[in-house]
Amino acid sequence: MFLKKSLNLLSNNSRYYTTSTSKSGVANILGKVGIGRLNHVAIATPNLKESCDLYRNVLGAKVSEPVDQVEHGVTTVFVDLGNTKIELLHPIGENSPIQNFLKKNTSGGIHHVCIEVDDINHAVKTLLDENIRIIDPKPKIGAHGKPVVFLHPKSMNGVLVELEEK
Image (tube, rainbow, N blue to C red; front, side, top):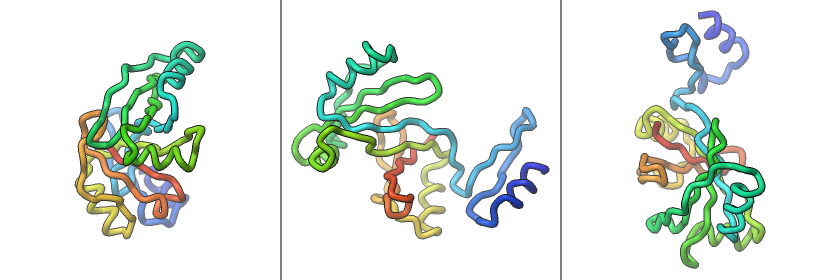
């Protein structure tokens, strides 16, 4: 209760509130959407092998094998950081959205951030009700085999945000 009152004092924005208390007594602060932890930061790379070598051999991270996500036009590799992941993205074909990104950012760069949500369908409905632009409101199966949607950067302070169901 204290945390809920404190949060209300800190923010007059009705989009944020406390929804529940865990068994340990620590309040979970969630928005109407039910956001959770940062799942990954996605980085587009023009050279997947060099990027994998950098994270594996220079930085000492655990790096997955490449997986082609043909339906999304990318090859993905996940770099495990313990508390989150980096997703390396490399285009498959000239029509890949990552290829278009790399044409503008030839050295690569951060493409999107991914945040977990409790229920993707509830999140989509809530966001649409709040006039948040969703690139395609129909969830697709993402690289982790879970439903995802992408929020348009114009609604998210210039950042492409992926929501992934927990």
